[in-house]
Image (cartoon, rainbow, N blue to C red):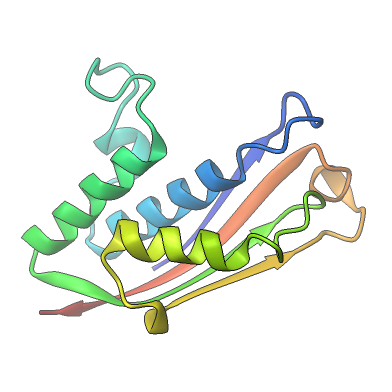
Length: 139
């Protein structure tokens, strides 16, 4: 299942949202591969259980749903698209954290980062996007 997620950066001097954008995109890809509704329908912010919840919580829940349905992660290919900050110094840490949350071997998780070459809101450092492809395998 391939997904796309983009968030506007309210304050571009604060380099946050990238982790959340990535996790939300992975969660949506897992849910989509399971034939389930999207993250906003499964974890609505109108429900007190999910209001203000950390993105890691959604990831753990999506992984739980994946296992309950009899699947495991076959492969994850994720691309973060942002102008700044450069991801290369943090890439292995981000990948390692993804593997831990997914309970996945690093050999099946790939992370790339791209800039948008100063074009549109992504290139102007006003937003961050992620593209994710997930392959689920029957256990």
